[in-house]
Length: 460
Image 1 (cartoon, helix red, strand yellow):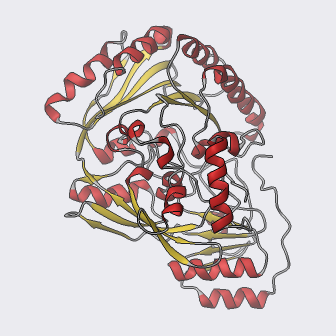
Image 2: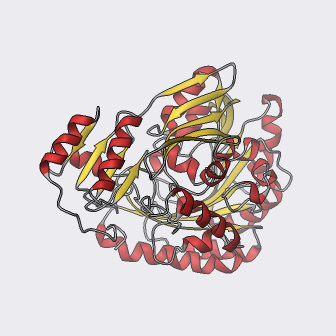
Image 3: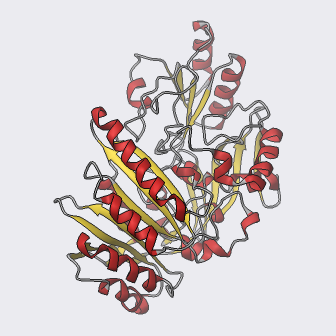
């Protein structure tokens, strides 16, 4: 089952030891049936229904250290929560101890040095709120409730990626609690091997309590959605492919096949131009002439408005199942496969998105980070989203069929942030043999006992 952790046996823990732990932390220690437990164990994906034996809501690094030491001493499975938005639901476990960083929201912006020091419990909406006060931003998630930690550690695709690189490419340093209870700093100059692994290796190597990011001047962007009738989808996607071939780095344009809130299915272009204002309309113009549009909402908006623009399409508590893969190029056959399977989408929130890559993302050498997909032109994301448990089998089957139809056109590797935890989502295949071997060696060094295994797990 997707909504159950595979390890559910809980060793007996003396209640006195739990009380002692509660007295040692500034945050709260929550047990089932206590006030706050039920709300805290819930995560964004409504398919995830797990019940930790304990949740430690950490108030700072000292609490993280205490919680980790307690879990290891009592042989408890450990889950680590930042924003809790990950589709696989790795932020919670059945039976073990959930180390919850979601109360750790400290953020210090250095406007002169163009950097930000951010704790691991922040979401991108909270991060952007602070950095935009100084007209600064870095590549972040597409939904404001996405946590900065999970997105960054898996790579970090976002609207500013083609211009400034992935979220992880803008990581200057990180403070990490390792499996043996040490707090270390990882950067290009200190624990550089660990720093490499944090650029796409997920939460395998420790608990990142603080991230230091490079920031860039970004205020108003030209952004919005251009919707074309689904009957025009084939021509629209082919012309889209041609239009973005010469796109500057400042333009990111996703293509999507989706159902609008008022009913019709459409081929949509989701655009963001973040460059000089005098060039904006000229750069975006080709996206407005791909067919006969039904709607065009593209216009100048504050960056924070863009970042919240699609929140309504990803409500918390909805049941989600995703499949994805990298496309080097958007061939006609891939376009046909996507269009054919949209017709069978079971529910309105199910959709397909082509995330526009390239630009600064592609200019980072493949071996410089753990992230895969530098050479891809697109990341293809198939989203099944629904409300009722009774629709689980139908929705999951649709996503799998659509992915299978697209599979011949994928060029290998998977964006690990989109792995759902399926037995078929093989992490080794996602990274490729050579990169996985390097990650495995790093795992053996920093977490030889696989303490941090509720993630896109790299086994030591």
